[in-house]
Length: 529
Image: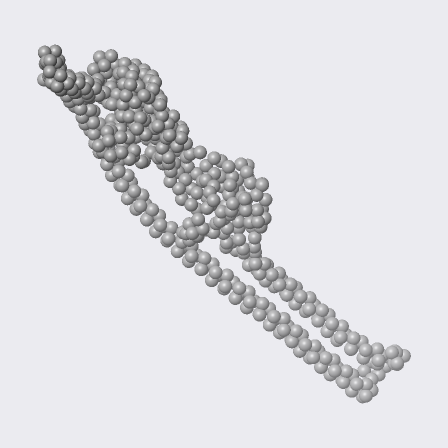
């Protein structure tokens, strides 16, 4: 799933696990020079646990949570339709009286929606505060209107009461003396009793005015007190609102200070990180230089080892082989001139031992430095090696070999031959099979070597383990891997129990021709001197 086909590819995003969302980042494992082939994938991951989300909430002052789309019970309590989210609607807002909610979908690195993220934030001015302010304003307007209406009603009532008293007095006194009013003036028509009654009525009217005036004052004072209490509550509400706004402003200032402090820390961290990156780049450049020197040294060691092997093989063939051949000729002469049966048996035994020793010397000479490899090439050497394994171990080896690059040195060909021989010996000792295949593919990018069998395989094999052999048991897979890695190549082992083993070796072309270039450079330097 995370396989990366190209060296520049990378996969970043989220992945669904049984423990929750996993944030991943992967990159192919390649050489330090950003070249293939890819031998594996390096992956970093971090679970988005509840503790991490709580820490994120504490740092950002924003409350959020991640909901799995498979959690039907939790999704049923969400106040929105999750199905309405999509490419055309990436966000949905939902408001309550005190909180604002934002919903969006989280996709995996493959683009599949798997989670719903919910972010909530408190509102600075709530609907309750708006309702209180509206209520205060409306109540003030209503109280003013009611007070004005009461003033008008009371004034009209008192005016009617006052005029009705005068009308009553006039109606009581004037109708009985209508004829007399025509003959005598108005003042002469009243008696003293009538005047006293009129004064009493006037005093009663004035008392009524005073009483109505006191009632009016009581009503006005009552509503004034109500208005004062309402204004007091309004002032208290405004003061409380001002305190809340002051607290919010102080909180905002404190948050800005924390943001500035955090920004400074991040800038300092970025500066430190940049310095570390520059130091790391310098160290990587030094490491690349050391690796180049190590590869050059490895190539030179391979050249020296090949020369030593050829020299040792030549000495064995020319000196020890020739001496043993002379001994055999001398013993054959003694056998031909001896008639004693006892001496004859001893001489024949010596001759057979010398013959076996000569044969062992020839075999050792071919194993150290086979002449057929330098005279006829790698393909002919592999055919000879297949015949030897068929003769010694009764295992059939089928080989396919392309023409190797002309720039490849003899030491490089010898390294390939000894590596193939060591891998085939491992097949004989451990694979429990009667056949194996060897393929040598030479392309413009390099040399690819594949040795495979259909044997018992290795159980629970991984790329980091060694072959388990002792240091005295030949190259071993570990030794082969080290040698190939030192010259810039790679070794990939694919083994399954009862399904066989396949070992792939890849060596870049420039490393295959490195030894030959070193020789040419030495010749040029010698000629320039």
